Length: 241
Ligand SMILES: [Zn+2]
Image 1: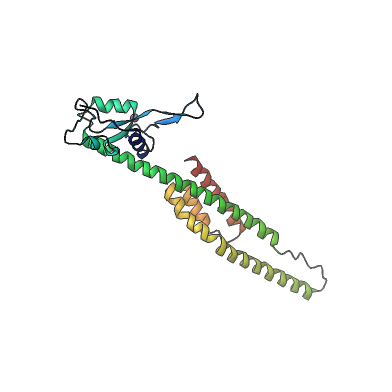
Image 2: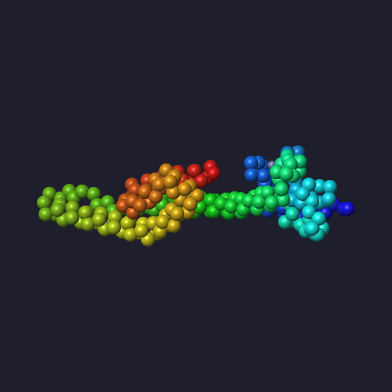
């Protein structure tokens, strides 16, 4: 009886569905890497193992399957060479049911890994953009801040008028700064916070510092500088993950 081997396309599908990693829970090693001697080539160290064997002599052969079913993507579990050997010499441990569970668990992990990576790198980009805009905002408002100096008048009344005008202008300017901050930048950090918490964890110290700095960030430029620093910390941590 002929072996119902996987075609190259089926093997590729099985490998991709496992995220190019061994499906064995305590292994998960990467099964592809660059070929060190050929810049245009890669090395594949994984194999598509049959859940039910390709031929009656193989482990876990199921005669009720059609040759098509036996050679299908559904019947393959992606393994490194070592783990593939282990499952074939221990068919009592690695039964059809166990291998199906290993396969679906590995595929779930691959989904999680691919989305987590995208979500994380998108978050880093958005945090960097926010931090740059925040620093620009702080710098620009410092430049725009009115400076009326001191009144050199000897007239008491005139000195008082100058002082009042100066105080009013300063209050108006900080009110304007606050409302600009609240409409332009605060909504962005409010949107970024839960995304950061979802990756770092709400109990994470850096996330908590970020959330606290965000809460007080509309108060003044010192609080905004503190927020910029906290955002920078979180970017650093996310980049190392
Ligand atoms: Zn392995």
